[in-house]
Amino acid sequence: MSGIRTDRTTPGAVIVVGSGPTGLLLAGDLAAAGVPVTVLERRPHAISNLSRAFGVHARTLEQLDARGLADDLLATGTTITALRLFRRLTLDLGTLPSRFPHLLVTPQYEVERLLERRARDLGVDFRHEHEVTGLRQDTTGVDLDVRTPDGTAATLRAAYVVGTDGHRSAVRRALGLPFPGTSVITSLFLADVRLAEPPEGVLTVDGRGGTFAMIAAFGDGWYRVMGWDRRHEVPDDVPLGLEEVREVTRRALGTDHGMHDARWLSRFHSDERQVPQYRVGRVFLAGDAAHVHSPAGGQGMNTGLQDAANLSWKLAAAVRGRAPEGLLDSYHAERHPVGRAVLRSSGGLVRLARAQHPGLCLVRAGVSAVARAARPVRTKALAQVSGIGYRYPAPRGSHPLTGARVPDAALRGGGRLYEALRDGRFVLVAPVANERAASGDESVGVRREQWADGGRTTVLVRPDGYAAWAADDAGPAAVEAALKAHLG
Image (cartoon, rainbow, N blue to C red; front, side, top):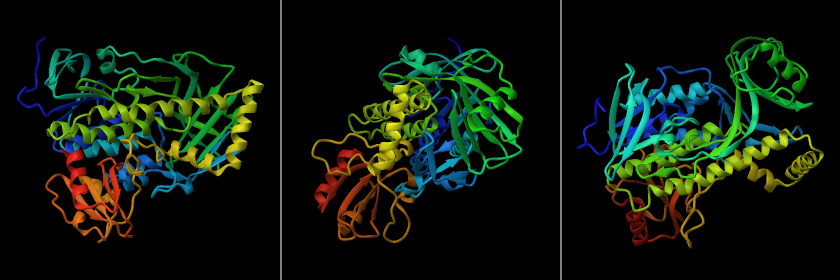
């Protein structure tokens, strides 16, 4: 095959296929770590306003805060502190133990715009209208066959490749991986419209008589409408008109709020699928290329962004030759169970929401009643939907904090933990009494800080904000052994 080929003497290059939110965050992280990154995108360059996601959960906002982006994104939308499920059940996001105790309602294109600007500022090489047609890999790298904008064939080489190219992933197909699952909703519609009589809240959700509708306010005069009609389930390519959206919304909500001037109308189906392996040699899958699920709970884009946050620092360590044994394998070990849990929870929510069989309706009523009455049940549901409740496997006998998300906290001398994470390094945070741990050598790639409020636990925080290691009353030898084990 003729074409250009990257220099085989530069094994540090990474190619990211797909320029959605997952690929953009990953590429920006790698570039920030000094890794040469190329992003290949099949489509022409554009920030589309025709994207499905509109909600950014607390854990994703924390990850963006660790990159100095959260405040800019918050300025693009509006926040809500309650999610209503099944009419009678409300989840109070305001109780989340996070700096971001809410759901941010903002279009996906605002997330993409922010992440693309960061990636470009860091020097990421974007190549649009480059379609992946095949790949081969060996012990030192990956060859990607691509079709370029003028239709000619080329081969690009990189040390690692990450497929973030959506549910029809060309990278996944080239690997020959299955994508098992089913369609959970066979016919959904989306529309961006203006409303003559806007609802009072930022998010309005309800359903009746076999219909469901949701209206979310973007804050700029446009509203996202999503819905379905059990009696009218048709293929994706059947034309969708504004009158159908109005009718379903009226039946579900009791009013269409004077809907008019649609700038976008789309029909689609919702699948539940997950690839069995997130890593095959030097090739990885993330975001919708690895898992897709129902829109219930708004977890799709969020899960993909958190995939990227987990993988990026591990790839950077591998490129630098500082990855401990098994580090790259831990991406699948940590993120595949999260993807599976999201499939189950979002699928369960949508099945209960659509329930018409008397037995399932009783189950739904029972779930709502138990959750209303039992605070631990509500707390667990909140932690899962928001993303802050997931933790990663830890070695037997580890401190209880190991593998858990580390909440933001004030540091001695000013600043916050998630501000300290912005340079992409591990952060060792020690109690005030453990001065020796806090003042050790930073040349091994760790930043040393102390908690502002005392405490007795020393925590080694990974670049993605999870505890790699923790110990109470840790001595210098234990600290140095932990650094050696996790930083190579």
